[in-house]
Image 1 (tube, rainbow, N blue to C red):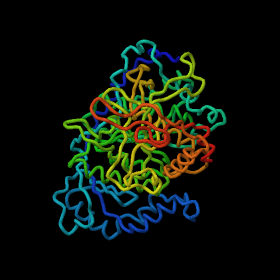
Image 2: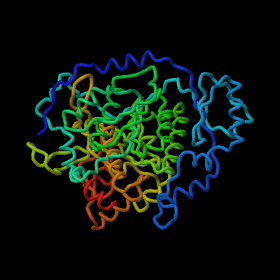
Image 3: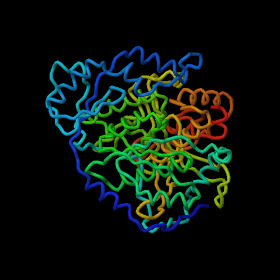
Image 4: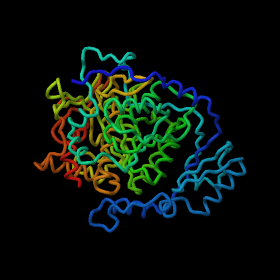
Length: 492
């Protein structure tokens, strides 16, 4: 059984927050532009997933996306004339779906430009975000109570049958994982974690400036996502894209990085009238990412069948997980077969912990083609799962502390797996859902077992009745967790 590691370094991560707080801020406004050639874009996205089509896995770059599907050049010029007159320095996006006004504050959008612009968003006004994690069990002195179980990176790899791929060199080498975050990480903390567990040094790039309101969970989220995406794929590089607080800026940066093939998001918006424009712009970027061959892994949520719990519980799914262009990752509680040593798969049930549980349910969006046959005409969540119980140690404030729970841990871990897959197949896998559902349906009919099917537990909470686990696909864990060796063999 893994036991809690002790203190490793004395440099406090809190110093990082002080440095960020002193960073000068320039006013920034996000302008969401209306694209064009919508039927052609839908046709391309479908053909890229059709193994019989010439466009199958023929991904396009951000510049090509902009030329074909972004705002028309004449429309860009009209919008930019208005922004310059409002005192803006303009930052264009290659995909021509967004621009940013830097240094100015645009006034009311002229009526003549309304058909060209979907949203004008002040990136410096705070909004309410939700991290899909529970850090309440982190022990300040790195003491794990009662000898409870947690994973080391090697034990994680043994449990989910990842180690056999690592041993053959499939470890994410040559790939870059993009992490959307609201704070940075202390590199010495990350280095100490990787040294302790025998992982190679991490190629880590941190880009962006956080907002003025940074919480403890912002730092914990960033540390968790960087640590465990890299622990699963120890050869991959990580790009941490730090948002000022509205997320869309950090998402946009990664979508336009042609060298980033996998994105992980474990934080999203509390749905409201205020956040609707931000959700709309983020979903547009997810669709662009799909055309570019990027895989996006998002945490399915931590409230079971609820999308929010306050001020009034509301059923639904995470705003990001509802997108048909992302893989929504739910959570499980794993148990080793032998408590003394993790040498292989043990068992799992749906992750449920009081008011928290694996997010899942039915969205209001139409059912994607790859979800046909599952009994709903709407997009359902999650697609797959990984461990979300408090089994993830992280480096924080100069220590290796234990442990964090939540689907926030499951999503970046799946991102690490996709980085390994991209390395194995020699090209970005893109939206992986059509193949996952094909394999899941085949397994349900007696085909190769590529998922550990979770059949016990439910994502009910103390607040709301959820959905039970059952054989095959369910609204608590999707198809289940990956038997990675078998899954990669089927995907190769």
